[in-house]
Length: 120
View 1 (cartoon, one colour):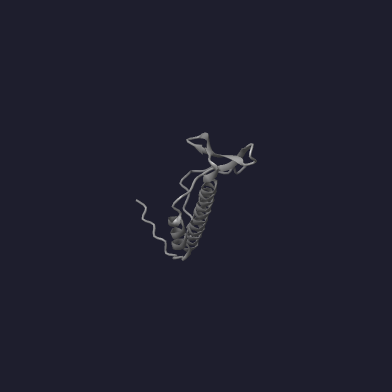
View 2 (cartoon, rainbow, N blue to C red):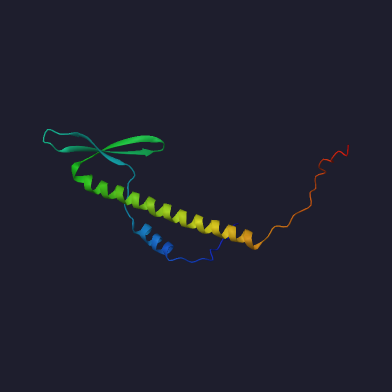
């Protein structure tokens, strides 16, 4: 079991986690106008992927603003997660590289017989 503890504390991670926890509604997808009705008002579809399949769902006009907010929340969620992954990856990389510098490698004798050079 890996019991990694991060010796470097940062103030960005708790703030990012609070922002993630504050997102209570989100939807994946793309809102598209499918056509304009006789009254000049647009009709909308929400397109998203589910279990590898493209799903298209009609969105009534009175729900468009809510769906747009939900999609924006999902984009913010993805951005926060990407930032978190990038930050933790960079710290992990720095720690790994600092461990290498602190622990110099010693040359080990070769266990393979190798080739002998010809003396002719």
